[in-house]
Image (cartoon, rainbow, N blue to C red; front, side):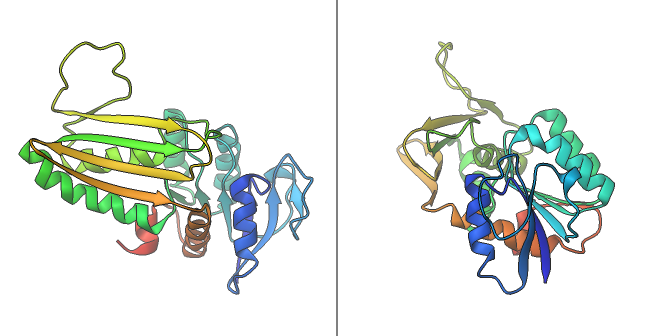
Length: 252
């Protein structure tokens, strides 16, 4: 039985994961961390990790970027494996993730779903054929009106996946409103849409002369991210220090 601390347990994703975990026989959430302690989750909830006295095998994080530094400090000191799902991290925080991974197991992923992680692989293959044939690359992501960071972590991961496959030749453009010039062939345009209750849409567009190839992923429920996070926690429990991704979990 893998025992998990849910960091950000009373947020939207924390509640989704709490519900999913109740039906799992090989995993149990034994404690939660949240400054809002108004919900009955069936496990004790603490205001901070420093206050938590419950033993666990891993932490699953779906809190906020401002809470990540404290989370990483705790996990490094306690040698606690952590599944880091929060997006919108600063460059300094990303460096800190890498530093902490030398002390404990850290799994960081911009998106926890099986489909998106397969898409990360597929767009690499697409870029090797289409980008080299002169196709322009655009990424359009759509999310609900409560999402604070833009572009999404998944959109950036898709861009990074493509750019990595192409030897780092590309740069990213987020806004063309102040530019009056033709499109640079070596740019990846990334656009963000915010509205309604869209769970998550990502389109990677390869636009060539007289033809367009689009890779798409649509999330209809937050449950797909929760399931992935819990599978990641089971994978990470007992692992040694290192920086892991969802590709390691699903063995892509």
